[in-house]
Amino acid sequence: MDEHYDVIVLGTGLKECIISGLLSVDGKKVLHMDRNGYYGGESASLNMNQLWEKSHGKDKKAPETLGSSRDYNVDLIPKFILSSGLLVKMLLHTDVTRYLDFKVVDGSYVYSSGKINKVPSTDTEALTSSLVGLLDKLPLRKFFIFVQNYEENNPATHDGLNLKTFTMDALFKKYGLRENIVDFIGHALALYLDDKYLQQPAHDTIMRMKLYADSLARYSKSPYIYPLYGLGELPQAFARLSAIYGGTYMLNKPIENIVFDEEKKIIKVTSEGETVTCDKIVCDPSYFPNKVEKKGKIIRSICILNGPIPSADKKFESLQIIIPQKQVKRQSDMYVGVMSSAHCVCPKGKYIAIVSATVETNDPEKELAPAYALLGPIQEKFVYISDFIEPIADGTTDNVFISKSYDATSHFETTCEDVMDMYKRITGKDLVLTVHPNILKQQEEAGQEQEEQ
Image (cartoon, rainbow, N blue to C red; front, side):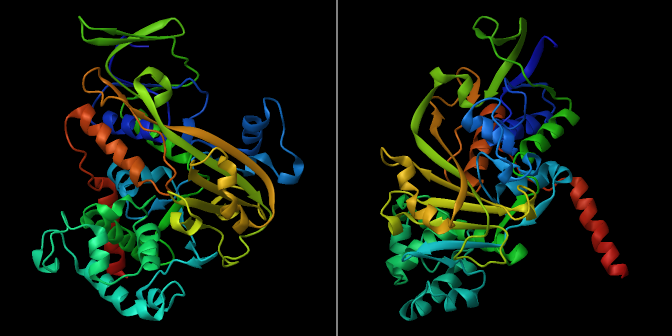
């Protein structure tokens, strides 16, 4: 190993790999190490034997009734990608899309009054949906028109309101929207985890709704996409990016010692008897337990099914179900992500449903009962409870920049917001997400081909 690096990254979770790639592109000398022998950390995708060993102990093999182990790519952190969201912008900014193939998720559902309803994908669907009562149709239409026309820098579209101070609760009341509609908008369209947003400025919620609409407009079926072979492909793709720009990767490297040299203003990192130095460290929370604090717990239950969700469209090979907090008397939402062989994550005929929620009681799995009830017969179940951890300090004093744990939300927006915040603290500048020149060239060539035809 070389002696000195600008940045040493510890752990190959998605956040760490994105940061590593971005810093390498910026010309930083990066060393990236992981104590594990595989990429992804908490955000890895496992085959069935790996998943079985994780749950049942080493050298334990999954039963043959589950199918071939190698046909499985099961996410430990289940999330979908908003097709106009921050993660897609990061992929386009870095041209990492060349390493990945994506497929649109077939549909999105929301739980209401004891059953699931398809989240409308058009204005017409919204006004004919069973989610919307007769008396709600006109006020909802007016509200949707306001959101559609809203432009942050054009006061003429603000209806005389300052949405940077006017609360979302007040805006809903201004349009006469009732609680069930508010629940649907806040959790199925703006994708909030809980109801804290109601007392916050309305601007952020409106922008979230516009993001959802923009994402939906790309594919019409749903606003979400998902990579073939699972989310574990994402950290590996950003790792390739870092390597192309000179980053050095080392797996199976346990970290034995980290020493802060105050006099030389460097950090010494020792692994397997070798010591290197760096100016800054980026890592996941597991590397510095004394510099983080627990904020809560997340439960995730991976369920193997022999068929599609009974109450959903049988043609859907992938879908999401959002269970808003008030519908099941919780303080935060519950999420169900369903995938199948269409995304190359399990054998044909099998389905993977992953339930995620923030733990709120002393019996976490019992909290998932409303979600389990929607799944039909469950062939096998793998339940994991993990701490939700945040760094105590921002890293600007000791030059140790620690990522947050992955929350229970069903999308990557909060993940990417943490990455962008870390990038700014590490570099002192904002991450400006432009489209990579290679992609612009491809788009230009595709446009020329269409004109010639």
